[in-house]
Amino acid sequence: MVTIKDVAKATGVAPSTVSRVIADNPRISVETKKKVRKAMKDLGYHPNINARNLVAKSTKAIGVIMPSSADKALQNPFFPEILRGIGSVTHRMQYSMTLSSGQTEEEIFEEVQRLVHGSYVDGVILLYSRLEDRVTSFLKEMKFPFVIVGKPYENMNEITHVDNDNFIAGKEITQHLIENGHEKIAFIGGSRDLFVTIDREAGYKAALQEADLEVSDRYKIHTEFLKSGGREAVETLLSLDEPPTGIVVTDDLMSVGVLSLLEESGVRVPQDISLVSFNNVYLSEIIRPALTTVDIQIHELGVQSAKALIEKTVNKSEPVKRISIQHQIVYRDSVSKQ
Image 1 (tube, one colour):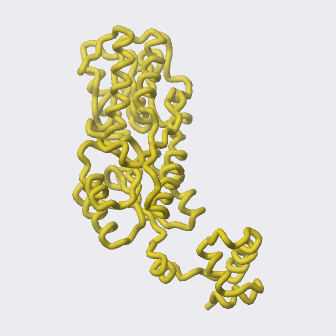
Image 2 (image 1 turned 90 degrees about the vertical axis):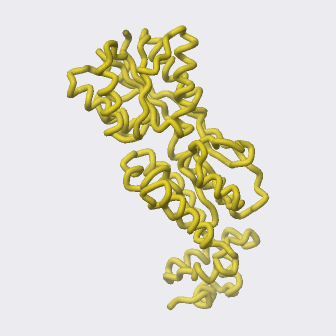
Image 3 (image 1 turned 180 degrees about the vertical axis):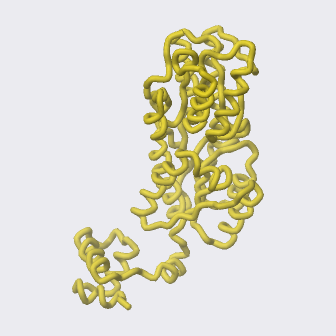
């Protein structure tokens, strides 16, 4: 078994210097770090993480909490992409990542309690923000480092969070339909208790009101962020006496469901109904018609949330931050003039 002494001998430095390189001590020069790390790789040396963490009182691990069961959430390309962003930071910083696997809200809450009380992770990223969330309240009460992807329900100035301006994005994408002559515009969103849905729906409503268009509850549907959710929602809209000519869908995977049901029903997009969406996942470009959608920079949301959390775990006095990620509309083929 390769030891620190073997690495020290191979590089001509003291064992204490090797230990400092492993800990990424800023007092060690970049050249020395490169030399020692190369020797570690060549010799196949792996630090005893548990022993090191015991001394540092750190696990070098973060927890990532999904809004629902992992098997359901991971059907949506949003989550693999944000995890890729988080993973790019944890890999570079030599942290590991623990993903929640609870099937229900109760199981997820119990898992977070176990992670915190058992000191399994240094901090937690919540990949959602919902009204009156037990997990958020628990983490705040325990003064445990955490970051929210989204806008906190309350105590906004006390919780570090990474977000887009979903109100403005919802307003702008709805205005695009209005500018193309649409007046009967529907909204398909996720759960009513998720802030991302609340803000995007508020933007949709504001755009309609500014254009003196009717805001009708008949045109607002809430469902799961899944393909099946999109299918069910648009089926309801098509059954109305006056179906919409334009639809704002708050998630690209839901839009895939919307498109499949419309095609089966003989409704053409964009000739009969125009469609706009959110997230700009890879699916939005390869389906036909390609979706006009809001690019919320999912990967960057992950990167910035991981950076912010690790900063908080390293420095307990790190100030609270609100990190805003810019969005942009990607115009494709799913909208036509009314």
